[in-house]
Image (cartoon, rainbow, N blue to C red; front, side, top):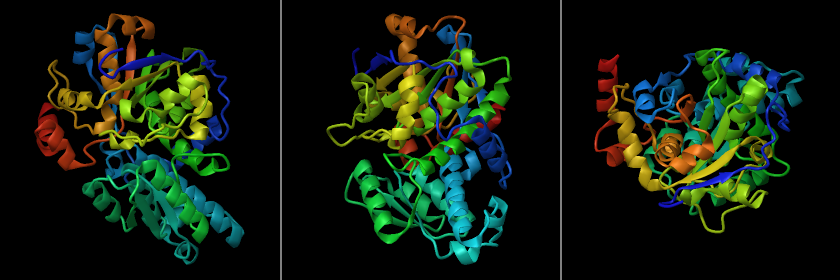
Length: 405
């Protein structure tokens, strides 16, 4: 395909309720849902119907799960990092206290004598680190967050606002993850990574369980008899895509939608892995303005699911980001205005390309009866970047959205 768009059909997809899932069972989905829904200030994020854009695109329905208000952190990552932080602290405290504390007990400070002597650590390009720092503060535990050299100042400050110590590395994202893991091992810190590797899967599995709070909400918002026919979801290291894929498969089984994983051209490690048929790292440092998707190495745990569960892998160019942000901010077909972050538009960009390319549209099985679900994974987590890319402030768009309602 031209202009940086590429589509790969995954011939290994064997899904329909038969995914080899470890650590992502219906019981674990439900445990995460029950816990996170009990947190202070929890409320489901909106599932927005973009009916005007759907009509213009000649499909039946188009939904956008808007994560821009999640717990005030601005992205779906609030669900995974904080949940995994709590689970990890529970397991470590149980080793010394003789019982597993509840999340409520951790929040209350009842186990502060334990948690203040522990240290949570993670690496991030922004949103995951914000979630881990927020979770560590909520559970009364010190936190250190490593960020790559190109992490924006606004995202660094947002992490620090939750009390974390921020360490800026001199490397890219993947190298920073390695540096963080090394330092955690050397110092006996508690590592909460959203990507996994051989020998390190339990904590990333907890992160992914937290993500399924979002897919639980989607299923409730759509209703039990109305699954989408297509889901376009962001790639990154694969944790989000795998969590949603596994959850939808476990519930909808034979009715599960076609699953399309979307990545930026400069950070398409999942696409490369799908083509190779095995986990494949990028030869050069990954780079994209979609900061949350700037990964060059796949998560081992996520790959086990996506190798069997994703129907297609797709790459999109960075050049599509400004137009998609403006399309959501200034919808031309009567839909409500939406503030979206750079990483949130990947699915929309892929869908729009498919709809205007008859060959791709046909390969994906998009037609007048198609019901498409997109995950708007973040809001303006870097307000300055949002203004730079759209020419307007997010506050202006939110004011228009409030007036629309």
